[in-house]
Image (cartoon, rainbow, N blue to C red; front, side):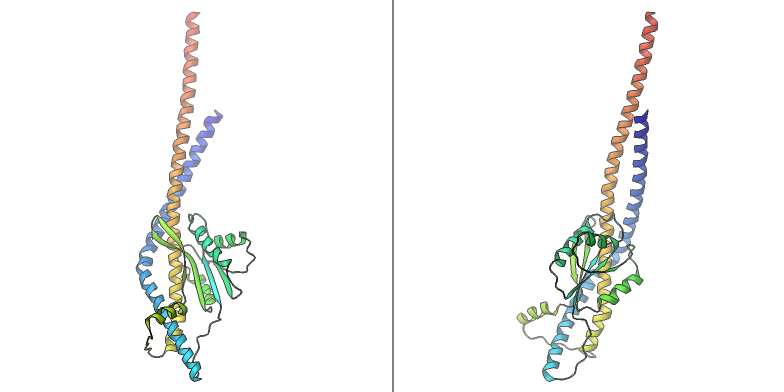
Length: 290
């Protein structure tokens, strides 16, 4: 009887777990569908916008060099001259292995940073991972909702990171429903890369209206904020997709366990029934001999 009770309890527990997992599955799928279309439709546009920002940054640096040569006064975009690495993780678990893979990529670069580089970690899971890694490096922590929209906390992050000259964001990126990859995105214009490209192409001429200072200043604030926000949406899409895949796997495992427990319970009940029938038949034989 104890074994029968234990198997029945296990069966009931697994059924409850399956209901919970399937509920989370539906929520993750709903969130993924809601975010997916907007992220994918704006991805190419934001990539082109970031490339344009790189060109503006390069042109602005050329302008500053010419200003220094002619000893004229030029308006400088005020940045702190430092680098920042931003790790976008999550506040909760059940996101598969995408957060872990992104953290691994982030940590590999953290080990190579100089004193001129600061660290920003977004999300409780990432914070705990970093503390457990025992790097002995300082970092700034921010909360950011996993729901996909959190303008208040996003504004706090932007107020900090927009002061940096070079911003690198570590996040997951959606490839397909079954595939999400860890990546890092440079959301500031990397003029050095363009300089090498343009040296091979020859001299480039730019025309800015109303002025290169005004255009560069606009890109360094408004456009950069949009590019950074896009990376947070990319991270959320990859997390929702990874969670859905992880929950599908968990659901399959629970259903397999349910079948095994159900089979064991039926087998035990059948064994008990056989024992009772044997006992009855043995009793009948005894009475017939008497």
